[in-house]
Amino acid sequence: MYRFLLTPRWWAINVFVALAVPVCLVAGLWQLARFQDRVDHHREQERQATSHEAPRPLAELLPLTTDTVGDQAAARGRYDAAHQLLVPHRTLDGERGFYVLTPLRPEDGGPALPVVRGWLPGDADPAAVPAPPEGLVTVSGALQAAESAGKVPGPTTGLPAGQLGVIGAASLINVLPYEVTDAWLTVRDAEPPMRAVPPTAPEGTGLDAQAFQNLGYTAEWFVFAGFAVFMWYRLLRREVEAGRDAALGLVPEPASPAPGAFARSGSPGPPA
Image (tube, rainbow, N blue to C red; front, side, top):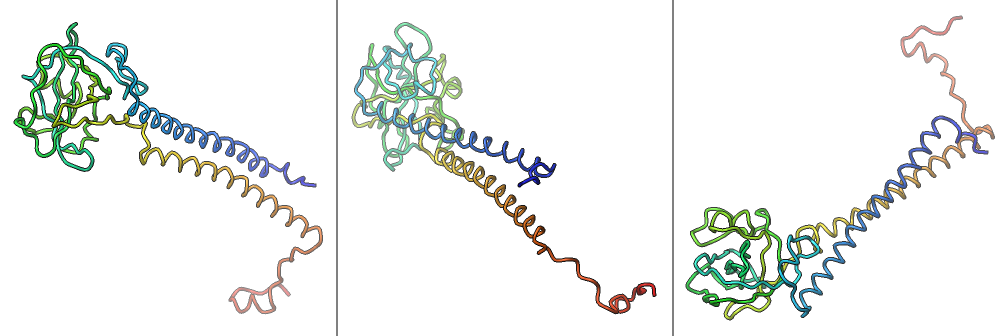
């Protein structure tokens, strides 16, 4: 009945639709999987933030991965108060302030661990910062990945001595006389008047605008698949209706030119 489906034109249409639909579905499912991964990671971050499970030794969590960012870690060493740094232009609960970062020198040697001991409101002022504990201390808190300069809310260069724009080994190597880990730790319980800095999800894993953009792309790919099927059906219906009309003789014949049309157009008329 539909012999026209065997014509080269319809072979091309059918092959195109047969390839386009699964490609769109696979792309949509991939975007949906990315969104689901972000949801799962966000839930894990929330669970870690409210969990009171015992922290794991720092060595077990390094090198840091997206799966271990936010995990509770414990490190033992001595604070290096002589190289304490302030990180300005940081907000907490909508209030502007600064972080207090003190390197922790491990008792067993190795790279120092940057520790954000807490947050204080206002401009970065060393006089407002309480001195770190002396002697050997055990510090516990959430591990964080090195920051990206493009994600930092304030300036990253040209800061006064004793201040730091970006927390990470690449920036700390310029101000500290020793090696540091690329990961840093934010303490769970800050010493008053400081407030603890909550951990943040690594870039590309939280429920941000990009996550919901993935969800939007999922809907778009599914719509594209449905549109391809819809257009194939429309073309099929139109071809069937055209064949039915031709079989019933309902297709109009080309109209003959009216008498004198050639003369009115300035062209020579038909031969006598």
